[in-house]
Image (tube, rainbow, N blue to C red):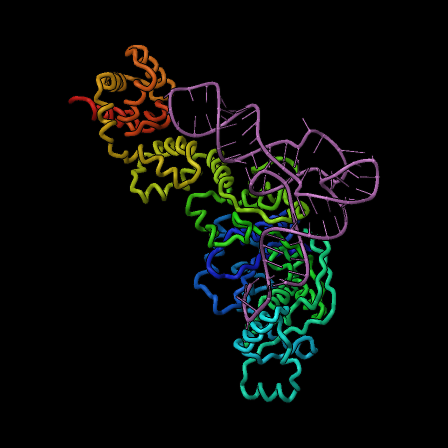
Length: 477
RNA sequence: GACCCCUUCGUCUAUUGGUUAGGACUCAAGAUUUUCAUUCUUGCAAGAGGGGUUCAAUUCCCCUAGGGGUCGCCA
């Protein structure tokens, strides 16, 4: 098994969350780096948690991020299908084999019985696990119950007093006692497999070479190893990723954080920033570099440099990084990604040149895509002026400045930054007004606020005609 | 509670026995700038504690403490 084949195997319970993104990303990066295959497999084996549209949503998000998979739903190969609910007979077959060979046994206990059993164990302070009461059922008792139509599950019979050792690529040697492992349910009474059976069967059949998953799976790894053993299969390499954490260092949850990747995208975070940021949560190159494109990450990534400890999901650095990408991506690119937001606000984008110029100044001052729209409001639909500001505009000196520009702007021959800057300079010289007293009235008249981009940029974005119009509004007619 | 995992600035992390323990974010101060924003400079700030091993430990080992994960017919 030399070929590298890895999989991202989410359960479609709604949307891709940040933790899922990190797992998907590391699988993807590892596959690309090692020239292997990245597979998407849908683990929809819990009927009670089915969410309509979740699979499509998941795939859309992955696509939106540019994490394209080589095999998976819609990209079939000889290993298809990739949706577990379409592979039920496979799991049943293997469960039956385990049953026949004595590695597993049927259990007729009802959920209520089990709950009661657990409560008792808990109150006695015992280790909570299935007490194997159905293991003592005779063959004829079992046949009788089945014939009577009693519902049952199939449980794995874990060996007693056995040490399970395995090498985790990130954590090194890990040892666990089999007595700590429950007799895990493999096949539920509705005929669906549990995660444990389905994942092992599929990982083997799909020839997965490395299981890269979250640390929450570490303690069930002995069960998986034992399943491989019972089925006579070779185990893949184990790789347990550290968790992404809330600010209080508990596992990242939607109670304390926004965890939906879609929602970050909707807030105006760039996919480039999101990917770059999440990649650095638990992985770091050997040098001090921090900004990476997806391709660059593919090249630089290695499992050896993945950390062991969990990392807190801290938005402040994501914000900074988003700003970095907002500055470095081509203006046309940002403009394209913002367009729908501007149109939603009803801004008139018929002047493409104006739009691009506005984006260019806005992106220097914003951290999120969505903020760009708000920032550009002054160019498209300026706010109402406040009374104090109107007073400022009507002051004699302010009026002089406005009038001067209203007169001189129309006769300016060129319309570029340099010419306008020259005009501004001569305005200051001629009028003998400078600093705040000079600039504030112009800004108030042009964009209805005291702060804004450099004056020449402001003029250029608004255009000559519009600039003059806005100035004249506050001059006697 | 049992088992397992983890532990360097507030946060993300570098440093795999010898460093003034480095970088980035945040924060603070200063510089540039007509404003805003950028940019630049500087600064604040860390090896959980205790034992070993060693000429030398953040780095290796042990213990303690703290944190986390798991213990479902959920993944």
